[in-house]
Image (cartoon, rainbow, N blue to C red; front, side, top):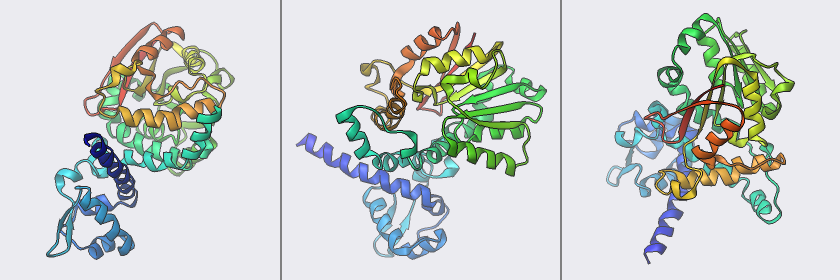
Length: 348
């Protein structure tokens, strides 16, 4: 019976993830965090949403113990200690954004099942919102701490950016990170490379809207950097949660090693974990990460005829691949607010 109860809890929590995603995407958590106890009509009005849908959503929030409910006044309240992990104001502590992965992965479940039966993979274009979700994720895990935690990982980087250096972001997605850096450091030049045309088009549009002339975005394969850049070109190369998705991750790392200047730095953000399954038993979000890996990271790599490395390749294999790519100096860092990622500062 204990296991049956565990499964019922899992079922409820899985459903709750979908409702949390809706709360994040519609801004309901953000609206409620600033409200006194209110009725469903008042909340819907403040959020400019349909009351009937908001009322049903609130039912899930109340029974899921996320929102408090007063039956006498029929009013709802998001406690501040819950808002601290559910709103955009929470920055890196906002866990609601991660719930979006559940609904997105559900859209490709049948396609992934076909891969279980026949092999192969599900390509990027079958994931309608993944680049949008990744940009949202990056805004929380990287953008919110870019100046305070990420740049200081490399001693003297702020000063070098200020003076002017050349940076490449491989697997840049919608380019929010280097667009922000281009704003902060007008004397430096920034390039972003991504395989998918949609995020590259979005990045171009955003940079143009900001009037930036020191950032450029290129559609291309990370495993073929030599087709786009000459050796010893960049002072800094970054990858943010990108290497494990590549069809041929070792080729991508070798290209980065060649494209980096001899005294340059490679900053690699990757999923925190162990290569060995037994090493991840106490990981706080291991199940979620293996699921995202199975239904996105691994399968998009296999769809390219690639290795299917997966998000949970782990520190041991990451170090092995970096060494095979020709890197000799690897430092791993962890950020106190970031339970999801390891940060590798790598030199030739």
